[in-house]
Image (cartoon, rainbow, N blue to C red; front, side, top):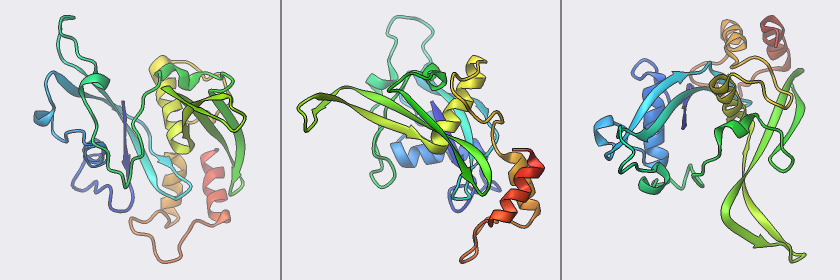
Length: 222
């Protein structure tokens, strides 16, 4: 289980909330996960494991991954409850299209049909763009050629990158595919902030210029 705390605009107010509190609140608003531990249905609990360095999205939003484990607190095997069978999410249709799961280790694997990646340039910095295609069990449809095609969910962009980083740390393994070696973008964000960028509230028409990001990324050795 991975929860994300976005650190810009109205989602996060770190003067009042910790990143983990923000992530819990967002999860409650988006998929109906109880915000407080007392509200969690028995026998489940959420164990806060760690927070990863903040990532910078192309939209200039900082996102701090908060890693948590949702599990059955029962110590015995008898009556063990599966989260996916016992907890039914309540989706906010304005923000969430679906909830699904995938084996965590697979975010380090480069299997045909599962992973696609390419290098992209953003303001003269090089970033690896990742795409994972998660199959949907029991969901097939007919193509125009009358061949059965398995439905898939696509995990991509910043979400894919953070899933990879979390898996790298969890398994202490290097991905099979090419990737950016650094985890998070806090070095470049600190330099941008020192240059007067990444304000809490964006001014009308404001965006990072090519020269500004080049200067910050070179100093951060991206």
